[in-house]
Image (cartoon, rainbow, N blue to C red; front, side, top):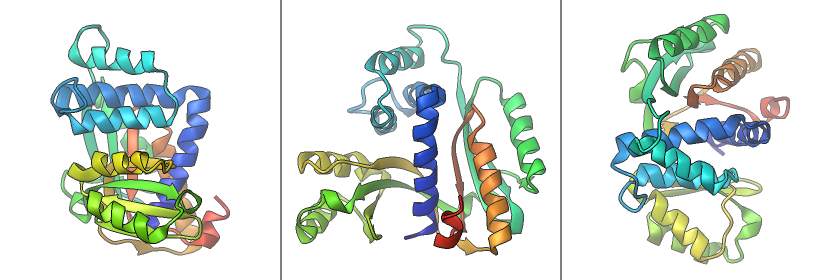
Length: 249
């Protein structure tokens, strides 16, 4: 599986743990608020960004009342939706490229926090455009292999629905889609009664870099520290993580 797949799995596992503590709901709410403000309105049928944000919120069992409240904050019906999305670019140990997507009410504070975290873990904040060219926005959907009864029919159905690539691992399929086909592919899975383990519309690296075990562990500590910040929505890198190192994370 690709380096992205493994980091995605780590993020998904961590997000589930955060959800138990209530940390994740705040991030999911911000995601919905900004999707309404910047994505084109409060109707998910006309706003793919919002549709993805709501789908992700439901994936983590966020209550419907929380989702509706976040949508209203986005439209301005109720107060508390003064968030803006910002993308920070930087480098980690070994020259690894890092993208940090945040949603914040105070960009000066958040910029300072991101810079300090990077510095603490031997990383640096780069200029706009310094590493973003190494990434592309795609939909990533993870399905457990046990959910699929007929592999050939599954593959054909996914391609017909708009999937552009399907990677196989020991126990999961990773379905990659163009952003515009993301919701369509998810709907096809639901129609075929195939449960979705995780889904994400985000940035993935065009290519990955392998580092030594020591440097890889340093990068993972940096990525986790960034991901734990309340304003940070997503952290992506071009690190390729070996199974040996993953087993120790």
